[in-house]
Length: 320
Image (cartoon, rainbow, N blue to C red; front, side, top):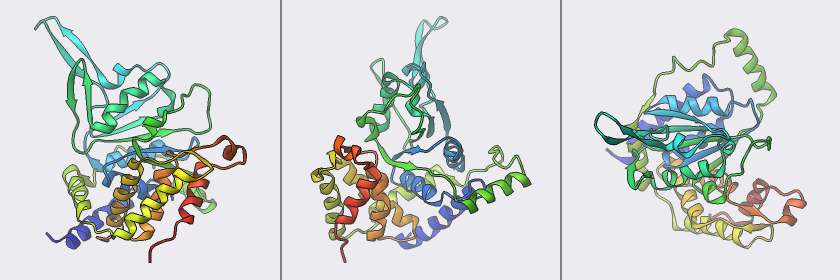
């Protein structure tokens, strides 16, 4: 099948996914597109937002729409690594040790409020996020090809939360900020709830896309064309983060690869088999916002990683 024809077929699937999400979630179109982009680019997603903006609902909904094994882990301060990865139990009948898989063994995993668990439990995700495998008691357990983690966190509360280390943040391909709905969108939310209070029930949602179809879409990334001038454009954006006086720790080469892969995925999402500069400008902030560590002076002046990333991207000349 020709690449253009494949993209056209999968574009219809993606539009069907978008429509299903829009039936439940009002607005948040950019957030939805970025989550779908991350899934196509074989990356994990961190969604940040204040309570009540439907972070968990959106993550559950996306997982329901993919016909794959789903599990949810609610991170709490007393959660242990074995509660995430699983544990080895002695079987009295067979006199052997049997491994009981934890909830991290699935295709789509929702990690709710990831910053509520201590560092030891957060570290249980390090290997599985990067290498798609878990080593327990000296034995390596591989994960499936689709393996994707969607995590949520609340940026406001500090009580009972633990800051994610930079090494773990870097394993998320995107950090997506979910904001408040507009006034018109909030009126729409109220109308929907007035018409049907059970609107947000997910039991009746049917999968729209299969694992094999999603993996086929991922395989198409290698055929998406990107000009060398755009590769230099990505490199110059990353170089800006390493030379800026406002940034203490710049983006790593992993961020460069993330921008490359997600811009190609966003192009497919837009129904194209080539990358445009706007694809890069769209995905770059979500790739950079959790990877930039600002200097104390920049923070005192009121700068945020989002604001700094936006300025650094704007400083780089867009290829013609």
